[in-house]
Image (cartoon, rainbow, N blue to C red; front, side, top):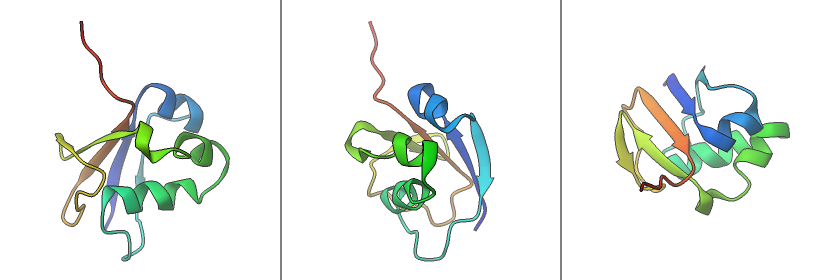
Length: 85
């Protein structure tokens, strides 16, 4: 299942790219699983995804918790918490 992954703010800066197309293994079922799989890549990925509690996600454009399933998704965005003013 190929996914378009989008990265924002310090996540993007740590990884060194704003997005990519990835094909996670079949056992990656949730956003949290995806974060863990990406962190295992090492380098900037390990740095960006070291503390999943500091991350937020959107699946196909809708905010989603880290335990949200990604089956059938086309896009997952990962970013720090959003604040407004």
